[in-house]
Length: 155
Image 1 (cartoon, rainbow, N blue to C red):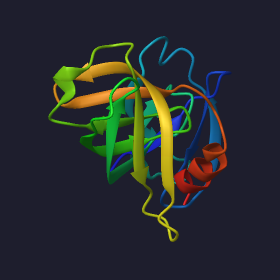
Image 2 (cartoon, rainbow, N blue to C red):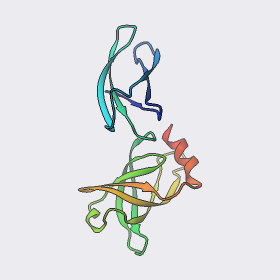
Image 3 (cartoon, rainbow, N blue to C red):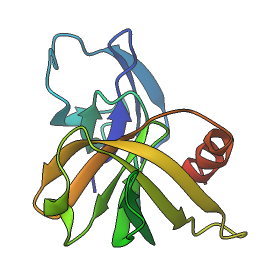
Image 4 (spheres, helix red, strand yellow):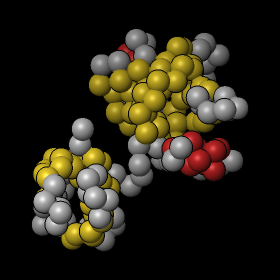
């Protein structure tokens, strides 16, 4: 499986060999001028070659499978969803009722993390992408859940 490596705002990436754990920082600005993702193979000084996916995202994104619901700001009706990934700036979820919403809509999401305390997250989000049943969102604000989400992401 390919290792995800995030590009810093200075266009640098840190590659860590899975064989010998040696790390090196590389300027990747010439490799990825505007794409969000780029797959490549890296050769370590130990001779090991390993697959890497360079990602330009601002924040690490964790894959999840968390049940919850979402609703429009102006509606009391709740719709089921499954949070498929989460980052510090937003989340992606799947719902068979995605056609009820459009880009730019603000919705409220509520779900439980799969951490020890089954923490409840309630956030207002803006819909940024709709692709079939998949909805990509951005958090409207950073608030008290930010630390909780931050701890969750790096467990």
